[in-house]
Image 1 (tube, rainbow, N blue to C red):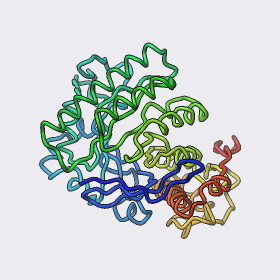
Image 2: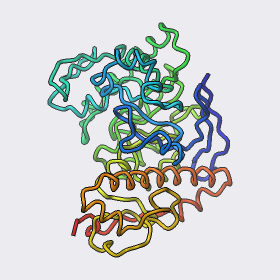
Image 3: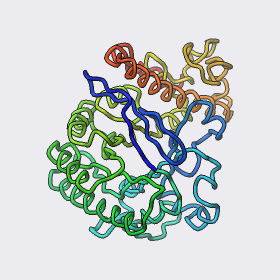
Length: 378
């Protein structure tokens, strides 16, 4: 029911244009996946997501397990029915969310003991429990339960997390096999902090277990861009060529372009929606803050080249006014634009790979950091 096919590959960089077939449709890669942590992409409706070209969205096991709970979603017929989204869904295992709880959790070889961030209640999540929740959610792609370490991490701390991640991945795969789950793909997650030998070993051991796809986790958590790219160079050469590769939690435009150049097929991040709610916008030259005073009389769209609803219908001056007036529409319009910006970016990257022009595409898409004053609400 799942097949990954490479349509074209850049011989210079390793960038790939592919198709990942799922029961709910073919995902054309590279792809950016909007994050719908709590069964919704914040501020966006299904028709709006379809309009901007979203092929697949994310849900999160940790959050949906706590609220509204698997009983409610299971009674609704699964996550697709519950949220009214008929297209592919990927569910994160909850490992990163447990990691981010910090003082509220304790990791053992058996699983993770944590307290709910909602009401403080105690829960114990094992690899099997995470798999069972994702089975009930009915996502098209499920992620293995893994351990993500905080950077910078010592070699010993990272090594212990790699061992746990591989052992948990094997338990996840056994649960998949024992329950004869056919309609969900299962992805393993490569950990290893910033240690190249550990990343390589983790990727090799996960490949031996065998998964439908492989993710690179534990990045975009404080390392430099150069460190991220160095680790991606290692995984690019180690992971199997015939499976999709997913870089978790990365959404800066420049990171997407460089990730694609290193053989990454799938991306997700809360950045476009979170930034949109705060008025921070992606533009071809970098980033701007629409709340800045210099946009008070700027009657041009956010981006002249963008085809999103916000850019086709409104000006910077108007959207700035909405923010300063506390209007919800401001957050919606900026979220709309940011998501469309990233989806357009990866779509353009795909076309350039198919046309054998990805190096030229990279040269034309050099994003600069915004001037600091753009992020001050003057």
